Every structure is written in C-alpha cells, then in structure tokens.
Image 1: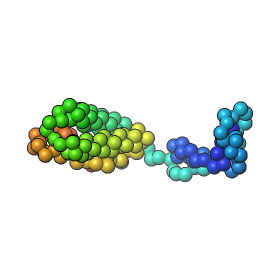
Image 2: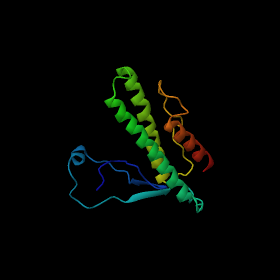
Image 3: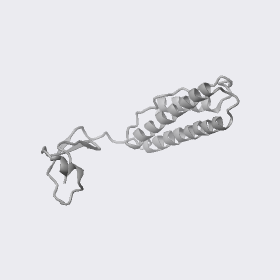
Image 4: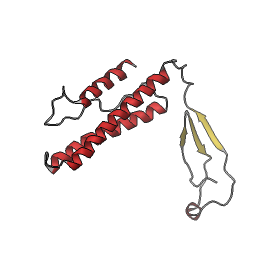
Length: 155
C-alpha cells in the first residue's frame, strides 16, 4: 500500500510513480496492514548507456581509491588540528576545518557518482586547502590534488 498521493522514486533510468489517488491523513499516520499496492506507472527516460570501455572499471576504481586516500589525509589533518590548538586561533581553526570537510564532502559526492556509473564526473573542488604555514611544494595534499586533476582530466 502506498502512503502518498504522488511520489517519485528514481531507479536507474526509470521513474516509478504510484497511480494518482488521494490518501486520507489518518492512513498516512498508521502502518499499512494490507499488502495491496496500486499499479505502477513506469516511464523510460533515457537511451541505454553506450558500451563500456574495458579499462573503464579499472579507471573508476583507481579514481575512487585516490579520492579515498585524499579523504583519509584530510580527515587525519582535521584530527591533528583538533589536538594541536596552539598554532591557530579558534576562528582560523574553524575555517581550516571547514575547508577540509568541504573537500571530503566533494570527494564523497564524486565517489557516489562514479559508483552510479557516471565516468565523466569530477570532484567539485580540485584545489588543495591552503594553510598559512605550509609551502605547497612540500605538502602531500598539493601533490595528491595535482595527480587527481590530471587523472580526472585524462580518464
């Protein structure tokens, strides 16, 4: 039994919606006891995907591994910042942590898209976070982000 008058659930390339009907409010607040479900309307929204390159799964796996490695370095630095509070003021520390977590989030979004089969996606943020006390040439994150931009550019 469907609870909503209209709902849209995305399943791969199909939109599945229950047939339109009105459900009284008391039924929305109670658990359905009937196993009857209304007929579904299925609409195909896109063409089948083109044939995959044999290297594509390996490329996607490498991209995911690279993004996960960057996320582990970013999270380790956030953890390190929380223990070493003497180097930065609380406002600076909050700004730095925010920069790092935005990059973690962007990388996770890209990983999600890669796992859904969108091979051409890129992380939203491709620059390493800047710390006032570090030289970019010595920072491993700068090197990892350079590698990431090249990998996502070529593959």
